Image (cartoon, rainbow, N blue to C red; front, top):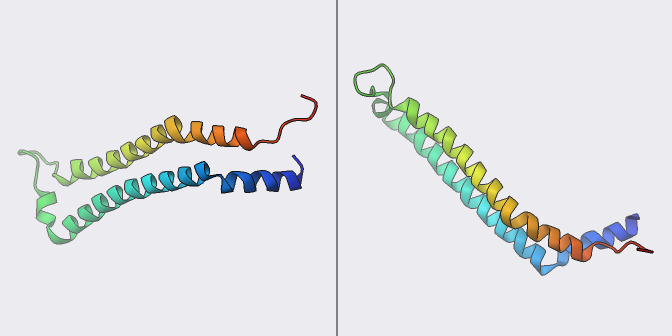
Length: 111
């Protein structure tokens, strides 16, 4: 693609209403997932700051405190939310983006 046709291609995709909608939906999902992990970590930090004893309490009569599985749970939550985004993007956004790109992609001459 030449530079001028590449600019036209980018402009055509950027102004496509389906692309604008796709970007908005993708952004909305990523903000929701970010909010979930933010509030989970903020809650954990607030618990550490204001009730250390709750997280320091031992599990049963062992030496491991409740804070260890809660912290591990936060790490697993972050991994799970990343997985949710990736699966959602692969199933929905990638196919929609391919359709948009294919519609606006310049046709090869002589083909």
